[in-house]
Image 1 (cartoon, rainbow, N blue to C red):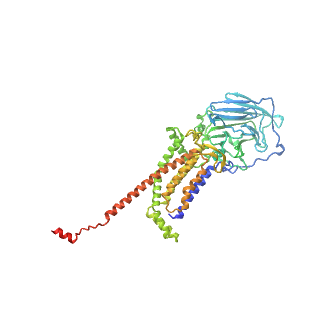
Image 2 (cartoon, rainbow, N blue to C red):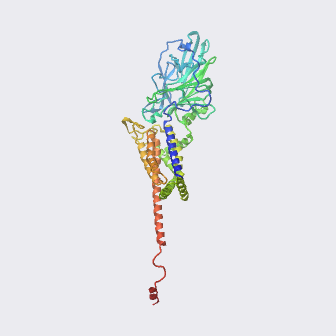
Image 3 (cartoon, rainbow, N blue to C red):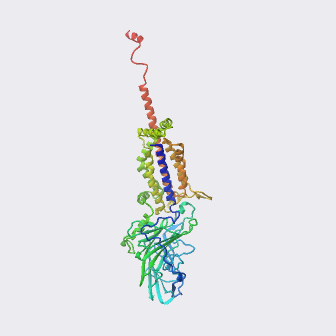
Length: 605
């Protein structure tokens, strides 16, 4: 292969690896930079015309203001929920089966502006002077349901009264609860504010708390919205314009997802609703807000809507029970919440295969770190024939170094003839330089799939490998903190990236020793030292599970390369000894079979 082409291929592979890994390690750094929904042409619409005359006017005022504000706690085997009678809202949704840093896990992340979820708003007033229905409701607990009721005057007219009833039904064995909203005209006309009746909000943010860390891994723990359509299998991520998203076409459900937990809301009659969502806050200070609202269109008569809501872990077996009515106590079907696990990636199929293999190994040895190591061994075994061919080809290229140098010297003034002679030499030796890149290209999608898997695999949440060191394979391991911040590294000292760097350089040294033919010193040094150092800084704050996989892959490659080098040296030595023997056997001796004259006379006597 021509030297410029070889260098070009090397450069392309390196740049591709760096570029894609940089994309995957920073893709969630800014929550506004997500793909735009392209399902229809009616998205990111501006808000309807605002009635400036009634902009600051509250249209609903309570008929009775004697209700007392209090907390109402409701508990099932799954949830512990704390309601607030003010606004018939929710203050906390605690998952009983999970914890966060030794404390109970609340899926409502509080903020200074608002600390309650599932408030109702008048009409569509959610972004411009929002008007929450924030009065104290009466409540009762009946048949396992928590029911809030309140009557309101519409535009302060005694002859125009509407009753608002909000009913919560909480799942006892499933991560679901249903909210039923009824707006019942008691006297007078219907509720209609510029064509909308109310908005149901989920705010200010999905819990649990963001990682208290300055590392890049912590910055990846952002929140992302997805929208699922009836006729599409995979959900699409939302695109925000100025931090706001609106959508007015049919949909199936809306999801807000964190690293391990999801909020999914599916109205039973989604055609009656529009979507408004917003994301804002300081990424650095970790106080991002992700608010979403389902906006109900006004209609004559009673309004009665039911919302099925999933709030729980991103586990397929917890989500797919809502695909068949007989599998859940809510009687819902065909919701396909688990398809949200497939959103945001093109290698989900490969992640699924790797996850199944890791789970199989985990059942044999219940340690996810051991499972990653066994998975690495399996992948290396599957790639062994191809990688061995690559190493053998590299070894042959190393043997050609003297002849390559001769060609360089002979045709130093004629690059075209130099390239032709080099190519002919490769053909003569049956060497295919591109073969050395094939194992790297094959492992590249595996590496990307492992990156996604180790960052989303719920079972790896808090999974310990080595006590006191690698206590969570889904996050960077931290031995201690620096009193200052280091560029590209932050304030935390991670040992795994250093071990990875050492194994990578060691592997590149041995690889370069066996395949230096046709490479300049600059290229050789970059591949040996520059390439690993760049990856060291890029992966310094990635999950310890991914670094464990790549480090062990390097270790097994080093062992394989060492064995290959030993076998190659033995073959060389045996070949040299064989040549020496052949030379000795073929070397002419002093005795030619013809006796000298004096010897002939003595022989006659």
